[in-house]
Image (tube, rainbow over all chains, first blue to last red; front, side, top):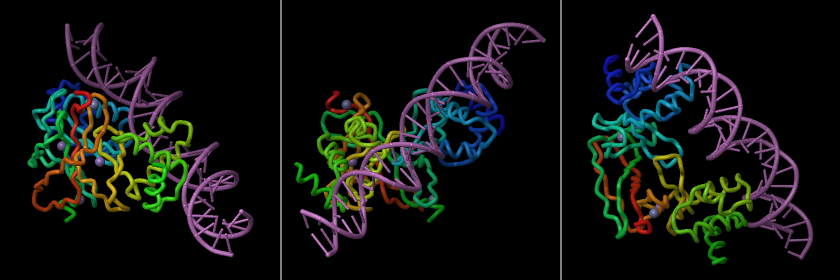
Length: 138
Length: 138
DNA sequence: TTATTTTTCGCAACCTTGTTGCAAATTATT
DNA sequence: AATAATTTGCAACAAGGTTGCGAAAAATAA
Ligand SMILES: [Mn+2]
Ligand SMILES: [Mn+2]
Ligand SMILES: [Zn+2]
Ligand SMILES: [Zn+2]
């Protein structure tokens, strides 16, 4: 596990530092998305707030994580698939937010349907966020 | 026009005040979604910042407007259909965000497709946000 | 209309979230 | 090990958003 974390960082041209290792580990352990706040709590007092921001920023840019749109103001991040890289994401899956436990999950197997737009509109990305009750809370 | 604005407010059990009239008018004139910032600029110096927050909050609760999820942190609001009411929205349409002019539009005629979720998941709402180039920018 | 009750507004003060510059510490490279 | 490049933490700041409360404005009653 230790080794693979380093590998992921190196593969994405990120220098290996303790904060990056810790935060990446959080994503690997937790299955589901994490908000900035989650990470600050879990990595509490180990790193500066600013470092968390910069780490997430770096992860986003390099294609280690992607973010999930929400109706409220809270950005959530989740691990990308292996084949995502800087500027080139392939996370075209549906996201699920549980109204009960508010966990946010990537449904990797649920493909985004194609949307027929009115004349004149061109689509480059389609985001689908489903909310409801997850299988744990059922 | 003046009369209908008052009517909309009354129909939704909102007392008629000048700030509410003004902000509702902004939504009616502008077709497309508005952010809090947009409203502050357009209603500039007429109302306090707090009043804008509270007005949007009230409009949201009463079902006058709905908000649109975005990947970045910016909440956008758009007018609801006539038959939306407190807690009961019927805005199940696709939203479009232009990457060029960043205008956000409700595509009332584009219906949200049904999503087949894995076993155990129950869906209460599906949000679809398409980004690309709008017909104006084409 | 005027009087009374209810709701909303504006202000100030505060909190949370996110950003930037820079010196010190850490990591990568030679 | 020495040097160069990157990252970190701190402090200071800016933007975004919330809360309490007295004054003002709307709604309701008389
Ligand atoms: Mn995902
Ligand atoms: Mn809409
Ligand atoms: Zn749940
Ligand atoms: Zn456009």
